[in-house]
Image 1: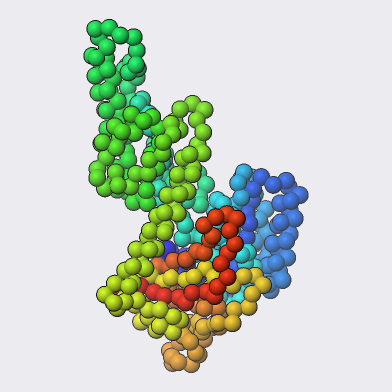
Image 2 (image 1 turned 45 degrees about the vertical axis):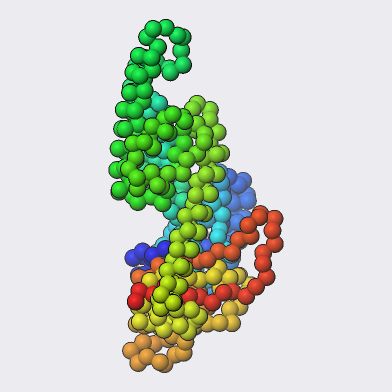
Length: 377
């Protein structure tokens, strides 16, 4: 992901900062929610956060949404004010973080945002369609539109007679017109939102007619779901599973493509290892920074490998005092130092996850892979 302006501002603003990355609300009983809230506040206070930050965080935690599924919460606080507040649908993508120091910890947010792809959901039928623009990890929808087709056609299967072929042709033309209107909505939203994919479900014939109306570029984005989810009482399980699979596939393909690009031309556009990546970031050469998820220390781990974070360009260094115009703010774990420099030089950041293929499979025991980068030149 490429960092937004609010992350760049936070990365440069003087601290101290309080960082929280924790479980958000769900449909848990109130007593459980209150216990979780107090545990979070104890963690923040133990990390050294001032009372003003603790109280600001307490107010956020008390704003319970009552969501049915698990949620995740990221907060950055400074001087008693919440500077960044983001809630995500779904569980955490890493360990909890309760921290207070001269710098905000950005990697947990960057890691979670990396899975937040936009996509279209199209549930179509012969008499119309529902089209939604959604973002992974966000509750609700960004936009929703419905297309209502004509209803003066007869079902295609009916009693025989001399007029049967004529009614079939009449119905087919109406269905085609309806899907043409649906295609116009899909094409417009695709141009405006650039979705990662289009999840298409619904009546089989309606899906066929719609695909025939889409442009080649839009058709290439379609992930077809063999389920009529627009029918009354339909189960959305197949659609949900297809969306989750498509999200994983797109992220994997984008990462693999960027890695392949870094190997092109004999690796001329690749920097590998901490020192090489630091040197590239100092020159603002990095287009995409890749960090192994295992470089992110857990709550009880001390990261032996650290880098100097600087208050001005070039933002990061292996040792302090190397640049007369920039001064050391702190020494922080490698992943945080590199990510901050990437944010401040407008580089995209990809966290390479390390999840077992099977839910019950053991995680491979290994050291973190060195960071590497795809360079701009």
